[in-house]
Image 1 (cartoon, rainbow, N blue to C red):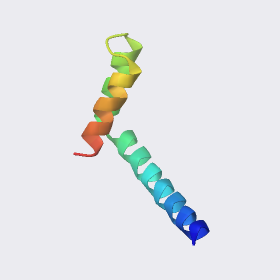
Image 2 (spheres, rainbow, N blue to C red):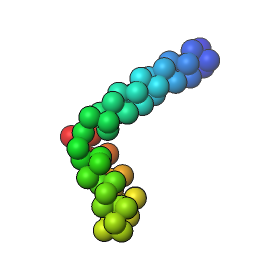
Image 3 (cartoon, helix red, strand yellow):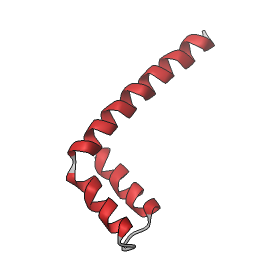
Image 4 (cartoon, one colour):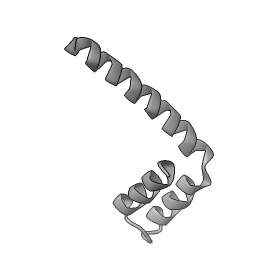
Length: 57
């Protein structure tokens, strides 16, 4: 039972990861925050937090 549970969790996480990757590629928010990080206007942790919040709203 535990093996099946772990396998199902892995499949779900992989699916979510793929969907998030597609969302980030198509969303201008990601590139906007990336530019802010590159220009030292924002740190990566703050940007990641803001992007995560925008994805789960």
